[in-house]
Amino acid sequence: QQQVKQSPQSLIVQKGGISIINCAYENTAFDYFPWYQQFPGKGPALLIAIRPDVSEKKEGRFTISFNKSAKQFSLHIMDSQPGDSATYFCAASKETSGSRLTFGEGTQLTVNP
Amino acid sequence: DGGITQSPKYLFRKEGQNVTLSCEQNLNHDAMYWYRQDPGQGLRLIYYSQIVNDFQKGDIAEGYSVSREKKESFPLTVTSAQKNPTAFYLCASISWISGNTIYFGEGSWLTVV
Image 1: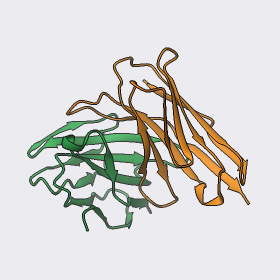
Image 2 (image 1 turned 120 degrees about the vertical axis):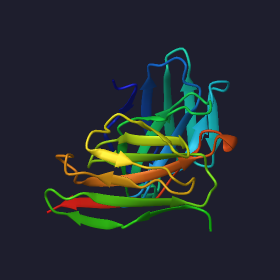
Image 3 (image 1 turned 45 degrees about the vertical axis):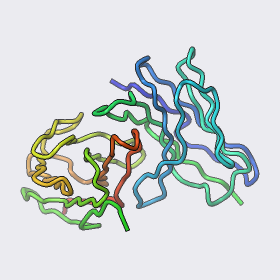
Image 4 (image 1 turned 45 degrees about the horizontal axis):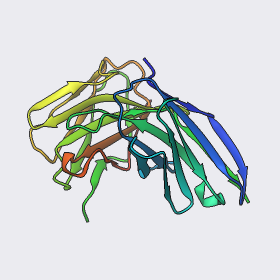
């Protein structure tokens, strides 16, 4: 059963533009929502994460927006750069020992120069 | 440097053969995971282990086996029973002390020839 749905599957943005990736979850017990960035042939790396006690978290050009009532969260990449071209995964879990991360299906982002 | 080491990076398997992918971590992490990634798809959990000498099946465990004899090591065997083993395999680990941040290795490419 797919518990985290991610969209779009692929995204093309011009340099300097805003990239927006959306995720929706079903399990209301989830309380930890990270985003991972993966370059070709590499393992994913944590980019930014949010907990449901805040509606937004910003780190540099990357921002997570969180809507608890809608059970949705999104990643915004401001001033997108060609170096941001990668696959992005959202994930969700319960922040307790022993919990498992459930990943979205990924979004392949291409930033054109 | 601390991290997760996967080997080999590339592996070719003949039909009917078992192969073992190595995963070693020196992060003193408690839990370790194996994920499978197919092109254009997300991460699917194969097996995970929260403590030494204990492991649980993930979502796609059929045709795979694991062991956890040491905290640092979590090898994955892809058996001949796995009918479509060609994929990118990712090992990961997590320390409950530092929250739910999951760290990934660089991955291993397995191809059936």
